[in-house]
Image 1 (cartoon, rainbow, N blue to C red):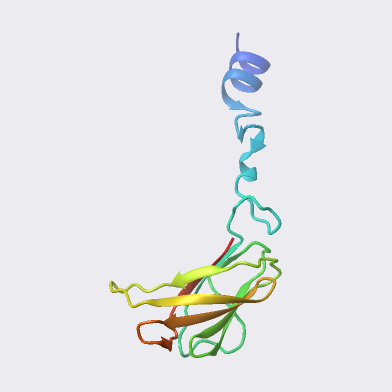
Image 2 (spheres, one colour; image 1 turned 135 degrees about the horizontal axis):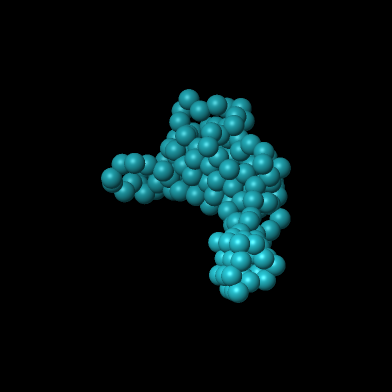
Length: 150
């Protein structure tokens, strides 16, 4: 009924199966799936996880050659790179990633709404052209933006 260690027990400090246990073989799973199975970090799963993200600090002085984006995540484990093509026109590349969908937004700490937005065009797998545009000004802009790949 009570044991310090047991294969089966009603109460145990450590047990393979137990009614009550400090540590049990199945205590770290949910429905038989290990905790690591609920947050996947691969590119092939279709369970709804985010496959990549980046905050691109776009500006007039941003590199015109592909450069690593700091603090970004890519399901392939490789870098996320970005470059400035021209005014409000950027390329964001998730190296080694097969993603085909990207979405994002302007990231601006200001408190006013200025009607700026981003649009995406897929160049290839994991590779997107991002256009930053201000509808109120009817002009392209160099503005910091986010990218998320589901």
